[in-house]
Structures are given as C-alpha cells and as structure tokens.
Image 1 (spheres, rainbow, N blue to C red):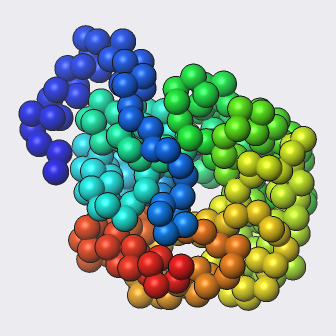
Image 2 (cartoon, rainbow, N blue to C red; image 1 turned 45 degrees about the vertical axis):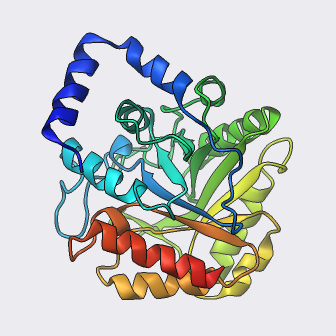
Length: 296
C-alpha cells in the first residue's frame, strides 16, 4: 500500500519540514470514544523496534526495514475492524504524515529503555512518550511495560515509573494501559516469562494498584491457559499477541478463548499479525477480527 511517491514524500518531509509532525498531530481527527460500537478494542502494536526487539521467528532482523513495516501497518490499519495503533513516537509520526491515523485510537508507548537482551533490561526507563506529551499530542492514552523479576532490583524504578505514569494519565482523563508480565532468569541468565496462574495473578494485582487511582487503568495481558486468573481484576483487559508461536491457528484459538472472559475487551497484537508465517497481513488481521467478533 505504501507507494514510491508516498515513501519519497515521507523522506523529503522528514529532511526538510520537521514542523510537519506537529501540524499532523494537531490536524488528526480523533475518535470520540475508545471502544467500538460493539464494545471492543482492536489495536495493532508497533513499539517493538524501539527497545531493539526486531526478531520474528528465525529472522533476527525482521522488523528492521522501516518501509516494509510501515507498509504492513497501513495494510492492517485499512481494515475497518482495526480500531487503531499502539506505537512509539517515530512510528506514530510516520503514520500521521502518511494520513493513516484519522478516526483511529492512538496509544503512545512510554517506557522502551529496557533494551532487549541488555544487562539492565528489567530497569525499563521511560524513553518514549511522557504523559504530558500524550496530552499535548492529542493521543488517547499511554502504554507501559511492567516486567516483574523478584531477583532483579531493576523492577523497582520501573514500578515507580509506571505508577507515576498511571497517576498522570488518569489526571488528564486518559487511558493508562499497563502490561504486567512476571519473569525469572534461567541458569544462563536469560529472561523467561512465567506462565503459571499464580505468577500472572500476582502481577495483575500489583499492576491494578499502581498510581493514585485505577479509574483509567487497563491491563494488557497474555492469553492465560486458566481463565480464572482474569478473575483477579475488575479492570478492562486487552489480550496481547506476544511472541508469535509460528502456528497462527493456535494463536487465534488462545485469543478466542480469552475473549470469552467478561473482563476482556479486545486484542492488541503486533508481530503475529504484521509478520504472519504465510505472509498475508490482510488475511491475518481479518482472521483476528473475526475471532474478536465471535468472542465478544
């Protein structure tokens, strides 16, 4: 969908007219409400590159080609079932300059300092949007990643940063989307996601209590094997796509199962839809949209 003229125009604007970004933010037509008319929310996520998480499957640099990534995002956003985007400033601004975010929900990604594979990965400093910049840019909320590792003190500043962001966003009446994920380090020092019910339930209760109010807090969670873990919160939940399993049917089934829980409002999926193994982005997005429609 991204033509040669659009691409060359984007590169020209980036080099010659930096003020175009501010004008694009100001001119964006905002949607009146977060949820669709069906009471659901379906976002495409594209904040992985900002923390150096570029791999999909066996390709360690799958997300490096920016033109290719933007093309995939344009295809996904063209589906009317997709409510919007979760992204970092660079990607949001590129899509704004391409005119792709009118009447879409746009959630700004806030903490990307925990670079994938870095020694300090759990100390996930806020290096993207701030709460004030989200307000000033006319976005619809902010998203933060909260990886919890009991044996890593880097969790503490991340907890504090997320709590502050939740409070600030709520003070402006904006969504604070928190993604709490329990991890541990294996014998090689590699971070491993804990998928058991107890660990995820604990992460949910910690994230739910962040900030001075939970009135605008949403949770972004992996599809749990045991749906009872979702009984740990009354907050609205969106299911994340996570690292693609390589089997789209399995991913869709897991998302569909989670969508049956009353707290779950929708999907936020990135690589699994943007880089499906069969290469058909439009088809992958459409399949996820159908699962959301059935599950809701």
